[in-house]
Image (cartoon, rainbow, N blue to C red; front, side, top):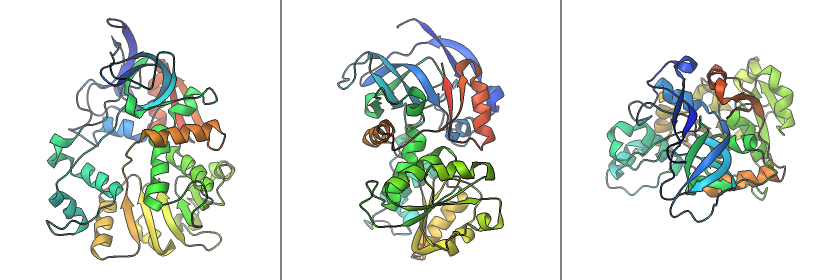
Length: 375
């Protein structure tokens, strides 16, 4: 493919929203060591894609302009780079094109736990990752970030974040899984400790924004774990969220929904918080004695609450989360889709030639499930 051009969508600077996207012809990328070249069949958008364009992680991400966004893809392996062992030309796959990872010094870790320098105090990995995200400017030398590339006809992916896609899983279903599915999986299994085979303890959880990308996967995965699920969403999506398996569904615009009160009077052992704008004071009275809120989009207020609860040794905790992708977890999700135990709900599909429409749809919010772009 060397020397050949492909259609791609990119932006040249921060800001601009959908109007800032440009359709261009660029060279088809060449797979390097441990990489595969993919002929893309579907790419799913995530809020982080347009938030990066907005400048939420400037000046670290994107690493350079122009930038082709999009990380969650499915397609067919066209070429393999040196060292690739598990894939060959013609294989159907799902991949996450890249992710962020940061390391910090012990002193930096202790700033977040309230410990003193030199104390070897354990820190939850999810919290550490978000701590790192907020400390990026001081740890830039250790940072490698989202290279994207998904809004194009071809892209390269690391073999380590690529998994096989069986015939029973469509490209669109597979492309929906990486960021949203893995975030839901990590929040439930690692942050809350739920066993998805149903062998764990019974628990009550609340999932906010349950009709969205992360939320709709979280409801389904929680029910695989035999968990009682209360969910919030808009009135138009109540029946949809019930169809995913939620035991109780609240319209977030009603007084009861805004207060997050369980209709059956249950206290929540955990909250998978996929929405924004809900203060800790609303969560706290609804939590069980050792309940915790897993915030997948933590802002400054969330980080302050997290620090305060740590410093005061509160039994009720707020846990910021940044997803750390693992191929084995992505493979698990793909297999659940194959077996009919998990489904990717598609909000809308857009051709690559109309990628700006998909971008605008994601920015507008309130998508039911995933927004997909197809070359």
